[in-house]
Image (cartoon, rainbow, N blue to C red; front, side, top):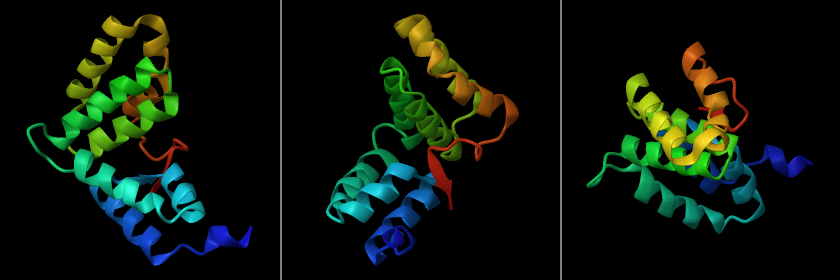
Length: 135
């Protein structure tokens, strides 16, 4: 499909913002905005809500989102949010503590959803997952 190769100006600007702030842009963003350019408004809302520091630092918001993804047993959600938190300055200790809290609250199913994120953290290889584009 040829449309995959031609990104709109809005898509490029939006994914550029996410890449600059998180170190990558989630793959779903590329696809959703290509199919429905109005989705850019939704992602801009997410950007202002999650990516900017407020009463909570952005890295903390990303750790909360990581825990929520684990509770939903969404491995891709956990990996994406963990990468975002790490790229926004969360330490390995902060990420591990959040994952321990996930284990307490969600048990084995939730901690299992963290496996890929833990492997990435162990290997210090944040580019190998398929949930986002680097840059």
